[in-house]
Length: 585
Picture 1 (tube, helix red, strand yellow):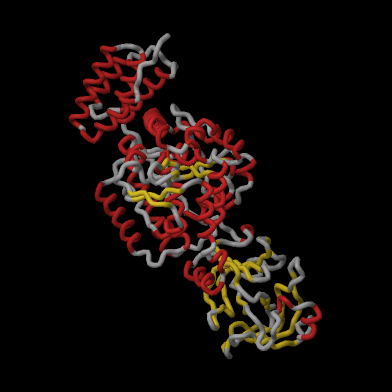
Picture 2: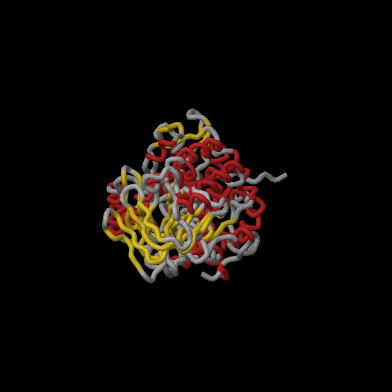
């Protein structure tokens, strides 16, 4: 993707290419006056209500991040302010894969879906939108402890191993969010998509690391409460951006539980309000639970279970051996002996690295069809190859020009002529290169070639296994074709309503004070009897201008709208409750 589609800065410049493929221009001019009115309504309602129930960092953060109540945030403006906090923001098109989302966080970049919910779904949308991301996530990062938790979460989360079912569920949720937010979608299509998500959620099998860490993300970053069980405050972005759920979550109908690692095993349904929420005593405790969870991941435990997770994921992953040698590729199979891996094999392009830097000559061109190697100890020898000094290696004939036959525990044999060895910075041998090499397991040939050199990885154990490559530059990761969110064409009727919203917005902002508000009101009342938000805005202007007769007329109309459309009743009442006459000295 060309970086010309967005305005960069020093933080965004550090992003790897494969993340930049998800960034899209915000196109601020595409936001309509109705979009702006939706933003203003939700933000006025939120700030009024959340000032009582949100963590103190929220209101402080709104000021620090420069997010206005009256205008949808412009990403360029946000970035100028966020950079002082060490963060940046980018616009994306709806949901992106969870690993990519978390990796952005690891680079201190907030991912903001730049679309905005429709007026019909002003209280809540399953699709990520700028209200959720901009008004929910951004303000809380002004709290340094929470910002570090978010960064660290991204760093650990993007290493979590997924399952094939995770991606299937992600695609289904993304599809549902797109069609639910698109105008004119048939109800039966939404029902079908919801059933698909429900079916997948109920048949996920054993949850993957990614599924578990997504649960932690949901119950903290999205739906977290902080403080005491009896008097919690809101900090989760999903709650901060939902005027319906932020009120609902504070009632006794939602169970409050002390936050713990158990939250990782508590699944959620994105299509319904949450029946229970977790309360953390403070932001530092979030990091403590995150580290406890990371200790259970293959990233830190490695071993046979770790490589088996990579094989099951069918995704590009990496194992790290006890010498620090890292092998990246699609892991095909592993041979085990007494519960320990003794041989592994990747298929397709693979690469070797040390400390996240590709080894010279060990790239995907060298290993285009896969990489396999024994690991473990040599049979009958107390010292491991990695622990051998140059003198030890010579004594055991593991030396340049020697013809050797190495028997590993578990029945792997490597025979051939040693060409050279590669060492790490600590002086340990991490790779031995052979010619005329043959590798067998209990007599079965795993590799044999007279022409091709064979690189044998050195390491007694697999100490880590994680999602993605060790060195990002080793692989071409620009491979995602995302389904696009649907932009519905604006029909003539919508265009007319839009023009009325625009006129009233321009009047309120002093751009055009010659507009007749009475005329606009009568037109809207006659042509758009179900529209309530513009009448609420007109009522606000009438009250602020001391025009009691006009305010009364609008109020009577809104009562009629409520009677004819009871579903709008609480929205209208909430909007009116925010309006207080401006005091004139």
